[in-house]
Image (cartoon, rainbow, N blue to C red; front, side, top):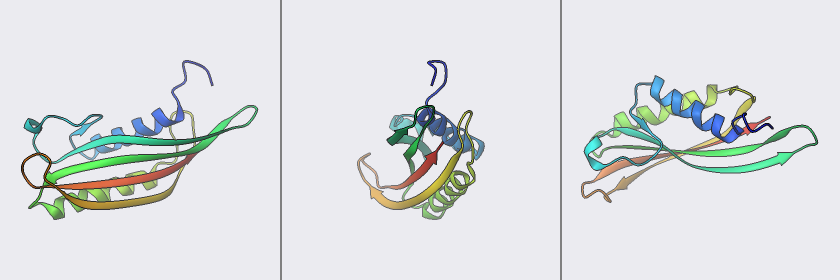
Length: 130
């Protein structure tokens, strides 16, 4: 892989980030300040499992996607979770790699870390790339 080529992990991150934006969601690669308002999507942590052959790289990436919303807007939150999961399942290719969505899990939590009760949706998506 040349230095100019983005890693498969970055390409998967970028594809998910772009999908969230296309859905019309305010999307960040960091947790924004409280003044941003809700809902928003934070494309966060990533876990990589690379395998290499003599000429290729392949492996798995687990991408974590967070959605924060007001605690009284559960239906909107679950609609956002479902829409993002559909987009992840439809992702078949990045700039330079073929990808397959292997597994998706999600959960909805009550989060009071911001001083007000929020809903915090968490999606974990496992992709295989080659």
